[in-house]
Length: 166
Image 1: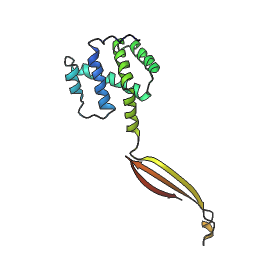
Image 2: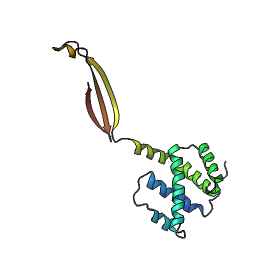
Image 3: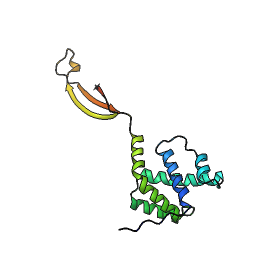
């Protein structure tokens, strides 16, 4: 049986909540999570400039991690590099970010996929190319016509469209 994880240092809780707030606003589209709200609730002692810098740093890191959909090995290498960088993050912050990503990776990934998807999805597609073999005007013979039939779906509905291409 694995040993239970030690409780996080007291300063880590606001950072974990900040990461949750950033994720809710940036990836899940939750309205109402403003910089002022996060600062007032999580870091009331910080000046607006200090908090803005912390939020920008954490938001940038989270954006990089999410856009690369980092696995735990990639995340560890990335965070280690960030702790060694001048003006980077502390090892405690890296631990909080790693735990946050481990717990929220799937939800953030699904949200990003849903945001990048069009409203309509392609359910089925059929196509064919017709050649005209006999017409009144000789210049229209052997003119190919592509017929594409697409079935699009939106939220469980189905739209049937037939598009001829000449």
